[in-house]
Image 1: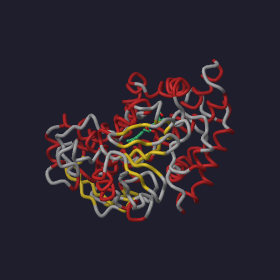
Image 2: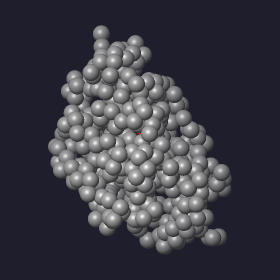
Image 3: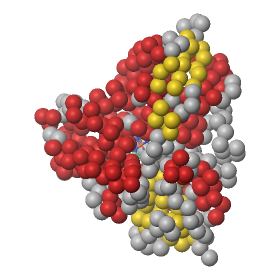
Image 4: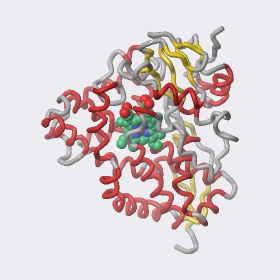
Length: 391
Ligand code: HEM
């Protein structure tokens, strides 16, 4: 008998706290049918990894949203492509976020981070999401993409709407369609004259001039940089700060042992899992554990559930600053694993390094959650940074 989950992962309760529902799904089986949204859910760590590696059976080319309307209108981007087309787009997209160009970027990020934290370490309250977590993505990364004024102004808004539209078509999803269309229309209007010379968007046009991708692909692939680069990093960074501030002893230990920084970034992204889930289309029948997802069905791959699977991580809900879970799936896994993970990691590591040098104690208040069909984390997080005695 096929295991079922009758709840709604796009309902208010699950959007606020999806983890009780994820646990039920994991306990019911490797692949669980959700009649209300007509989706299969895959929630266990091992099965999520298997599903993400099976990219010729569970495909992205027919979209990764949980609704047909958006899936039937996907733009020619990297996230929603398969096989050779995907590999070609990804090769071009990834170039500016490879380790060598990131090395050049490091000093600029360090200077920005030091200046930012110096300004915040006053003992006065601020909103850590807008004033701390958003700073590097919104200033440096948005500039590196090289969009014009309108694009930079709208980026965050469009990105959040895109993630809402990638969920189910509940009211939130429906209302966001208009903004997704605006983003798609905006990128179609871009050309050399409207993007910054040498920026990431301009590099896509260079690739089109060389004939590596079509001009339509170059325009659309700007979405690959705009949509997934900002909120994800902002949400992970905010969560990391909150975990450090609210876990007894964690921040003091980190200050005493800065080598823990890379592992703490991994552990924070595991627990934060800013992208809850994306779907795949079953191009053939596929077995996941003892379940068979039939050809033509859609499967929801629950990154956030896999990252809290007690079958894989002991005490999965705990922030363990020594766990260093290099194998988490918060950045995905397999062919579509995150193109920007080295950049996101660099931003988070640099912020932490600067924080422990300049800030002796962090206080945080009650966070206000983000309401989004696909993203999770905080909209607002009150915080106070107390200056370190010895800077
Ligand atoms: C903490 C920050 C981030 C998180 C948690 C995150 C998460 C993810 C996840 C879960 C996927 C897998 C999607 C799938 O399997 O369908 C993904 C893919 C992707 N991410 Fe990220 N991401 C982050 C930062 C970034 C940044 C900074 C960029 C851009 C510079 C970026 C660009 C992309 C792109 C283009 C893909 C699609 C890759 C492909 O289809 O081959 N991400 N990301």
